[in-house]
Image (cartoon, rainbow, N blue to C red; front, side, top):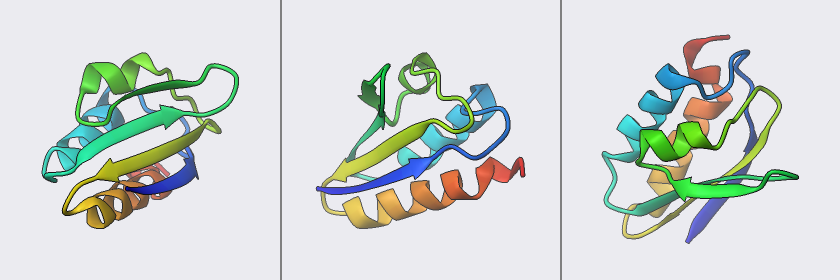
Length: 91
């Protein structure tokens, strides 16, 4: 299993468009991908499900953890982490 902790940096957080983009990229990998909201309102869900990602309520500044388990786990986490670090093209 490969994991990485990050901070959501885009101004609007993971609203509909970024959540859909996250899940679209996650869906291109064979590994099981999970996204976890860290902190007080800790939640975890399927990183390939737009509904699960949006239900976590991930605003700017929120700490998250992306994890993947499977044959392409490293590539999956790194690609998704780069998307988050880049602010989903919103910054």
